[in-house]
Length: 101
Picture (cartoon, rainbow, N blue to C red):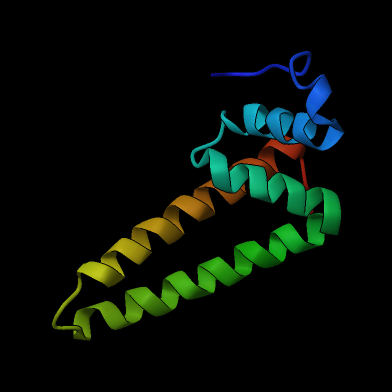
């Protein structure tokens, strides 16, 4: 069941904000992560978004570097795919909100 802001009046302002963020985030590659990033942006500012991007890019590089030396690669490959998806979503958030470093 999908609720709009009008149906959420009885649930309080916080529930309505969450529904609005989720609906807005659906236009991104990873909507759930985008909703978290929008909350992070509102709470901590653009600087934290760029820090998250640098952090994920660093973790991606580490995982890609160790991949050739592993015997069992599937879990690391899965993490690499997840990092790439999160990086894509971060870049979409940066572009959507016109954030500058």
